[in-house]
Length: 502
Image (tube, rainbow, N blue to C red; front, top):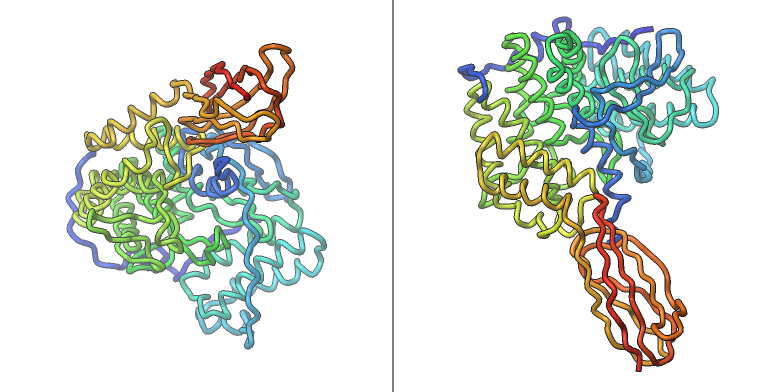
């Protein structure tokens, strides 16, 4: 069975492109301990954007229900997330009947009603995880209906999500958390979030689109087919078109939007125009600027004296994630350069000014920060370095070029270590303190220089700054402290200072 996104009206393209457009002149473009859980969680979104990254294995469902594991080089090898437990929905005092609401939302609601009844019927015949996951997606639709957020323009994406979950949980394999999934005959990328079923991975799908463009003319038919699937799944938000997320994530409740996924989509439509010279793709890209001009929570624009920040998550107006901001600017500038759209040029100029002002706060001098006070893991450091190199080429701005050069150098520079505890009192436990300039795995061997007895031998992950180990009671004497550190890029350093115990 192949499932199509149900259009908002009989002529989906006409409906979505009805908005009047400005005249556009077309031209060619010139922890402590790293808090890894939160970073890996964010990777569900952030790493999906890099089509040139390592190929990812996706589960592919065939029309007969069989599932195979295939390589898709256009879907990045993102770190698999461990989603946070979703908030328990509040009990609704007056439940809304989805079946009764559908005919009021659209005159021809029969296909949606058919999908709804199929999901309910299938869920009754399932058990365990399968029944629970499909039930969670059914509850999502019910919850949106109860809050008045089940609108006509959200029906295509929500009921495609419902249909895909019905199809998958009926016979598909039980996926691992964060597993990417696709269906035969479709280019859309889905992702499994335990407790929330399969959800459309907007960023992953648009990242695949850009990868198809970069692959050359042979892949252009797949690119246009992918965008033909994604276009009817956009909703009206922020005065334009937006691709929403419909799962609970990092404290946010659906429906929410992301500047990075939106800008990656804008870039994908721009690339499709360059591949086909079909101006309708530029029209869609222009309409997608809406949420970039709208304050949260409806949009992702946060104005400041230096310009504008574009948010990774519309539900976190104070969250500054530099790689997401930079990727947003790349997509926005790509469209602005190709189209000459004055709105996009204005938005890029404001964001460009802000990003250059923000950059110093994300450079520790030896490594990059994910957000203020939180170091990047290796793959994010590499990712943000690549984004800075792209913006350096696009703009020639010194903050981008210099920071990219510094971050690239960090990948080959060994960590710097220093022992700050050099004296201690005998027979009293104490903290053996050391300084480190970049995230690294640090090991220590504390041994007597006289007896060669080892009193401490351990290792741990450490963040930049001062860290310590708790030591046992030591007799008076001189001790050798063998300190070694290996950073995330594999660079190694070691020192052998002495400790005096009196």
